[in-house]
Structure formats: structure tokens, C-alpha cells
Length: 296
Image (cartoon, rainbow, N blue to C red; front, side, top):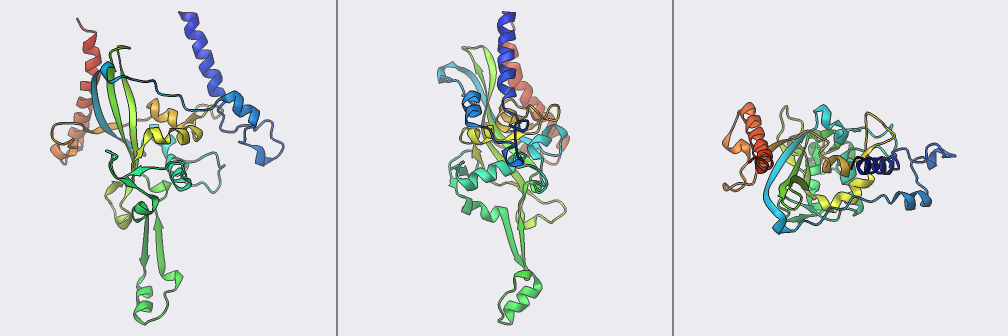
């Protein structure tokens, strides 16, 4: 059994070693070849997301859907936030928000949604109002009132960028697989959260989810994009791995419940400490189900 586990660990290390952020850096003959894998390397790497195993509904003994906040000013969550300034850094280093937006604009992520229930599809044009604020200065208004053509310098444009993202909201399912006799987690959706662009310059602006992405739709994109590994830059983690392996710190702000999936803040208001305690209570309730299964 130990030999079998050892061989599995070796295979895992070798497969991860092939996913270098600075691919081909030692063999490159000019800077343009850095980060570009050859066709032979692509064939050997077989670099695709690890497929989810099929789970029959009859094998799910217990399940609970929860929504969590990933606050980006926590050190554990920095790999999802940085880099925010990409002018002086390689093209292989991008924040999670930049990866999502680039994939949406290119069509690699075809569907985005209005909420975490994925009932209403949106397009990039639909969400532009939440991403861009265009305003006219007082001098520009005076120009318009005088019947003159508005000068470009009197137009202020404010775009939501990676630096403005404060949180990520994720929706996931905890379930007990009775066939394998263990509690598991499956990520269902993710949403970047930023200040309302219309009030972004206020001292304490309201935070709003910009859009929701059905996570399985984005796995291929997130697998290709790598986050920075502070311990070993030769072995970066893909964003798909970071999120699936829960390499982040988050806390539950909502669970599915009989009250229409009301959030914790709706029944515990204006008390951040008690909201955190309630988040831990929900987490312990889920965790204790698995522990109780082994208590005789």
C-alpha cells in the first residue's frame, strides 16, 4: 500500500512539474520563445483539467449548498488578486479577474449570468454598465449648453480593473458520497465583486457581484492560466487547481435554507463578529455530519 501511494505521489509531482509558468525558458533562443511550449511538449504534457468523476444522485446521502466570500486583502488570497499592474510583467502572469475578462471578451467563456442561480444569461454588452462609468465634467456640460461639440478632454471614463476587485463570491456544494464514504466539495459558480462603478469614489462604496460564471464552463480557461506559487515559482498552480483544491480562505455568508436562501447578514445585522461565528457554525454543522457517520 505504501509503495502504491509513493508511486502515485511521484506521478503527481512529475505531472505538475511539466506545467511551468516560464515554459521553455532554459531552451529559448530569443525572448519570444519564453513561455511557448513546443508541439512535442504539448503532446507529452497532456495538459487538460482533471475531469470530475461521475456522481449518481442516489449516492449522495447528504448535501448542502453554501455561498462563500473570498476577501482579497487576506494574504492567503493574494494569488487570486495579484498582479494588478501588468505593464511591467510577463504575459503569463495575470490576476484571476483579468483571466476571466479576457476569456469572456474572446468568447472562450461563452456564458455569463446575472445571479448565482444561473437563470438569466448576460452578454458582455449587458454588463458594461457595471464595468464602465462615463461622465461629463462641468466644463463639458457648459460646452453642450452652448451648442458646441463636446471635447474629449471633458469626458471622464472610469473602468473597473483588477485593482478594484475586493472579493470573490463562490457557490459550492458539500456532499457526502456514500459509495466512497467521505464528504466532498464541488465548486459550482464564481463571481468577481467590486464597488458599484457609479459610486466607486465614495469612502465606503457598496460592493456588488459583476457577473456569475458557471465554473465547469471556465475550467479549461482557468487550467491554462497559472497563479503565482510563492514557495516555488517553477511549479505554479493553475487557477482551476487553486479553486478546486480550496487553496484560499473564505467564509460562508449564505446557505440554502427554508427562508429563501437568506444571507447571514439578513438575520444577524450590524454585528460582524456574530456573523463570523454563524459562518463557523454552518461550517461545523457540515463537517460534523461526516464525523457523526463514524460515531457508533
